[in-house]
Image (cartoon, rainbow, N blue to C red; front, side, top):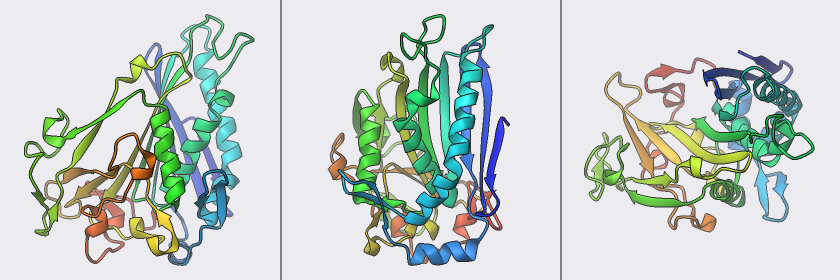
Length: 316
């Protein structure tokens, strides 16, 4: 681990780590811990309000409590992430040229990871060492970063305009996309049958998933942030992703991956849930009505496990 950041007074913690996969490539992980005060946080989620304007031009608003938590820990994270990237890319012997960065978190940590990933996108040039000729090292080679946001059991963070902003940001750093039936995808976790309806373990009918195929990011060279992808992982009938309620104006961003049967010690299924009606059109996003959102009796038990990995008992 490279650095541990925390705010004990607010129950916040984040972990920054890395490893070298080869002489020129590094993997960087920024992980946010869930809440250490579950009762207060659940109350806040149920009666949350969109009381912070994130982007006044787009009308994007977010949960003020989430944003205050992020602001409390962001300066230290930004400083340490800048230092880590400098250590990796300015190494005189074996400087790293490509950084594969994952920002992740469970529950409240997922909300903080969402805000952190957008902050990284917006401030990418502050993170990367530059010389007078631009964002290059002394040897003149561009530094390229592939950024992935993966949240696990995260709550809704903002309103629909904020969710659209996230998808719009994904599109900005994706050269092209295409949506194909899941059966045509080589990495389809459900196998064949992409054109048919799928029945989940409760006997309910779910629309066949589709897969968003991103162009190979190696073609998107010449810029510091080479790609940005977003994954929103949900588990079974987890309660937390249903909060704060849509009745209060909150909305999830794409792209949902729903893990079923994670509590049973049996085989799990991972469904990619189509949540963009028209590819490349941010205003066409939707919360898929057939995946985690459709499950009856949402509960905290499902929040503590995914793929039979425990996050509990107080990992909220």
